[in-house]
View: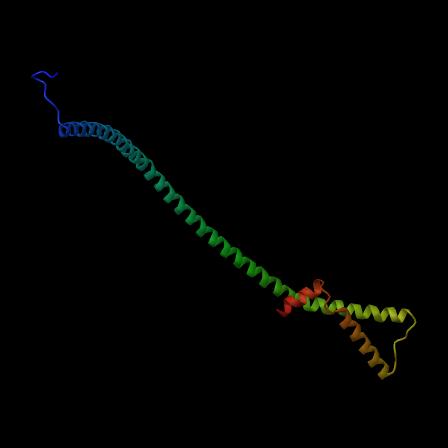
Length: 166
């Protein structure tokens, strides 16, 4: 059955042979994986260097844009402060004009209203009283009419009065 040159392989030798073949296959697979991994790492290195080359100018441009925006904001702050000062000056000017012209204007309007009422009463047949008591009564009525005419109503004169009073 067996020739003289044939030798029997023991179970231990067979197990050793299987382990050696398994290790050879495993090492071959690991070598293929390592080769592919090295290619991926080379490509990643190239990608990182390309991103770095492009990112640095972008960061420089972004920094310049931020500086420019900051300068513009400072200019806007100055403009806002100037507009605020101009608005305060305009408010002060309108208050001054209202105080200077508004008071006499209100008095003239009230006086003309009182005179108009007195003339209307005279034309209606009411006579101007000659007795001192009647004159005081007429003066009281005219003052009441003037107060009624100058009472705050939400119109221009009342706004002027409010501006003058502060």
